[in-house]
Image 1 (cartoon, rainbow over the protein chains, first blue to last red):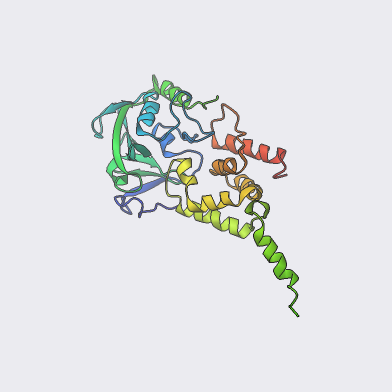
Image 2: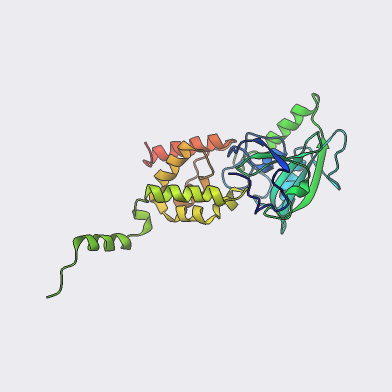
Amino acid sequence: MPINHDLLPNLKPGAYRIMSPEATQYNGIAGAAGISEEWWDPAMGYPWPADLPHDVSVETLGKVYERCGFVVCDNAELEHGLEKIAIYGASGEWEHAARQLSSGKWTSKMGPDEDIEHDSPEDLAGGAFGLVVRIMKRPIATPANGNAFRMASALIASRPDG
Amino acid sequence: MPKEADPLDRAVEVFNQLPAMTRRPDQDDFDALVREWRATRGHTSSAAKMAKNAAYQRIIAMGNAAVPLILAELRKQPDHWFLAINAITGANPVPPGSRTVNEMVDAWLTWGAANGYIS
């Protein structure tokens, strides 16, 4: 579905770029971790860490990302050698997550819809996604650590009964 | 002398008294709800929040008779119908270790065929 600007009042038409067409195969939560083949979700049957609560709390999602190599940081500025993500939410529950690109712009998989590139985390704040409630960072994947991150990202999302 | 009830009116009356689960939903009504769900679910990354959508809930309310339509839709265009079928049937055929939406779709279609919902 086209981007619904009523839901995201800070995202101005023309201020973002569609990077890939809508896809129900992955969501913004997996996409922020660099995974584009899985829909990470605590709901029944979806990939989610077996030993973490199956809830939509920001706290739990933070722990998921910690297993992907992210740690909490205090700003969303572009820093050499670091990849940052922003968790959006309201009332302690997550609504979305976005990832910083090496260009300094941000990428967001919009649920089952398109993947977009936008200028800052704030572009998606203030509407249906709530506010930016946490910024996290990890070293940018290199030939030396890239596969390790990817494997960690894949392994965190084991089924609860898997 | 009282007028005899029209058999057609009587049939409609009986039909309307049937529980929703025993009726076969109209394909056009179902398709309209599917379109409404996709248009109004927003950009959420949460399957549970998608399932709270009013159109999705109306499909769940169609009951067991909607399952073949949902599975056919799932086969045509993979999407997040898993919570709906689970809510209606209580089933959870996705095997442990499944990771992708396509694997989940395959599990539900296999289950649907095994249980006579689809061929």
